[in-house]
Length: 318
Ligand SMILES: Cc1cc2nc3c(=O)[nH]c(=O)nc-3n(C[C@H](O)[C@H](O)[C@H](O)COP(=O)(O)OP(=O)(O)OC[C@H]3O[C@@H](n4cnc5c(N)ncnc54)[C@H](O)[C@@H]3O)c2cc1C
Image (cartoon, rainbow, N blue to C red):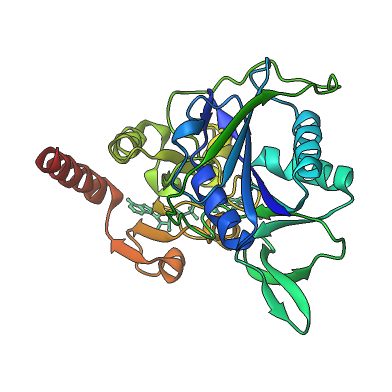
């Protein structure tokens, strides 16, 4: 028996999320074999630090696989390697193909898992975030097989160097009913889904002409930019940057909120981020209650100073 973990790729490289997924798979597997599966990953041989025993790399002519194809592939390999547990991530794609894999394997699908399962009253319970990350539910799998969707940044990366067996092969998949022929990013910058750091700003910025300093701060930190809902509703920023209950969920290591009040609908989308820094000129802004670090001050004074300090720090450490 083994634990199978599906690792997404982008531009023929394993995505950043792979390290956390493999670490989780290793912890869950215990003495069982931990097997990774990915498609078209040219850097697979270097993926030796996170406890995988084997990494199966599928060569496929398509740049991106459809959800149907991923489900077919993962289910076929899960059968082949007798995997009882299949681990996937929490990307928008994963939420879709997770249910398709489970249907193919007649497995239980538990998404948003936040920790290694615990034994309670004779059952293995999976802690998972619910209600837009406002609470946790403990869920037991009723099928003998299980597909586990791990929440981003919930488990962390645990290094575990060990020899990796790499097997590269192709696999015929049925022609999907829908295929994306390619993915084009709106800009070359980090995306909210993949970024470790997100710099987000709200209506306190007064207008779109003031986003230069937000982008500069994001550039220095290698961060993605985001915004509150009214900011995208007003057309100051693209809708793809709107985070919160009705926007994108953000689960980063560092979330910097500038001129955002901290309404519950905004917090719902960001409260699983590890460290939250709030810059707001109103000491009573609700966001300060959820913040790890807070700066009470005018964004137009604080942000340029922060940029200068970071530039200075970078120059010293370069
Ligand atoms: C059904 C529903 C769903 C919603 N979904 C979302 C969602 O997904 N995401 C979301 O963001 N919102 C959502 N909202 C809207 C939400 O309720 C808030 O209205 C919104 O988040 C407020 O945005 P804001 O903080 O940018 O603006 P404001 O509430 O106007 O806050 C601006 C903040 O900037 C501060 N500020 C002003 N000037 C400065 C300065 N010079 N320097 C520093 N700080 C300054 C102010 O003190 C204030 O705290 C939703 C609302 C509803 C009803």
